[in-house]
Amino acid sequence: MNNSKGITIVISGPSGSGKGTIIKQLVKNERYALSISATTRSPRAGEEEGVHYFFKTKEEFEEMIKNEDLIEWAEFCGNYYGTPKSYVEEKKKEGKDVILEIEVQGALQIKKLYKDAVLIFIIPPSLSELKNRLLGRGTEKEDIIEKRLKRAIEELELIKEYDYLIINDSINEAVENINTVIEAEHMKTIRNFDLINKIKKGRF
Image 1 (cartoon, one colour):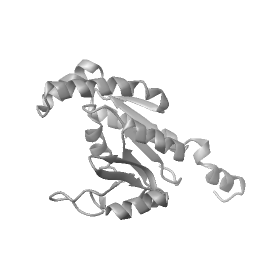
Image 2 (tube, one colour; image 1 turned 135 degrees about the vertical axis):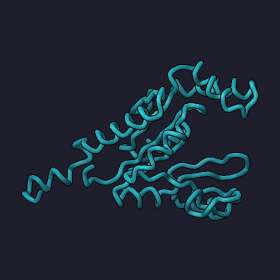
Image 3 (cartoon, rainbow, N blue to C red; image 1 turned 90 degrees about the vertical axis):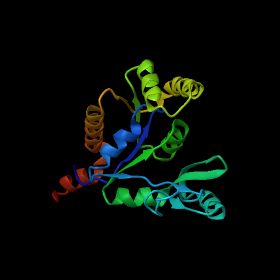
Image 4 (cartoon, rainbow, N blue to C red; image 1 turned 180 degrees about the vertical axis):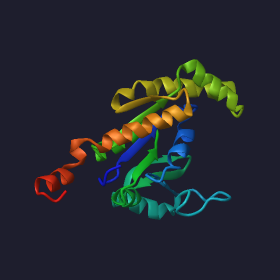
């Protein structure tokens, strides 16, 4: 990888697509950093500040919203969740490619803020395979699974807003394909103007 600044990578996909497993494999590579969200909910057993979440009071979070310190945010079940700008920017300056696992609406918010963000959508080979994976979890009832499948179909309508589509038929292949995408993104001329200028000035 060259010396260019890190890239903002947004990974989305329906529940059961395997995006969480893919991200766990990606972040084993030191080139990547996983974005840490801020939340107003209480820490759960084993969760650490600055590792799993940045835990905030409601007042602190609302101050972050007011000051535009969040890339995106949402309220869910009475608690706020959001992505702090400072952490993402800090890691990118270190040369890390920052991965954000975010649902579709949040991803589109990020695309407006970061025009050069790379949006990747993960899907299984088919909806029937997606249903099989959800059933295989054994954690949800049939009606919940049907709702998730309906939501997946709705999300497919927004795939055109994404830069890349990764079919997760094999975790290893999906991870390899994402690594290839990011390597290619780093080689784009638009990300290498500083290097081009150095070459022109004979300082390469």
